[in-house]
Image (cartoon, rainbow, N blue to C red; front, top):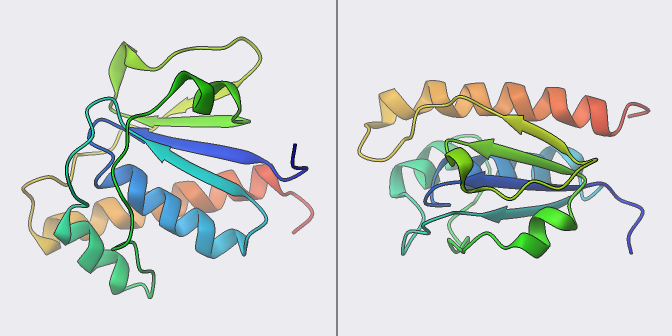
Length: 135
């Protein structure tokens, strides 16, 4: 078991919001946080607009692969951040759960996705400050 905190980001398709959040957490934590993602109904590929808006920030999420969230991922994570997956996420007592109300970037333009990206960045920065207060 690692002494690094583990965060699981979950959205329905694991193709936009959760991938952007994971990209930010990996980049901003410099490896100090173990980052996982999953979805309740994974898409076949990462949202190309999400890839593009993250590239504008210097973060490459193009190699991500949408995957099904597992009960084990939830159980083994210190914090579980959901983004619109509703009641499909399993709950384990004693875990930190947050539900970030964010618009789904699916089908949106670059100009519509940038504010979602910026909101995700601010939330990831706040979460990181809580997880690693000594940084």
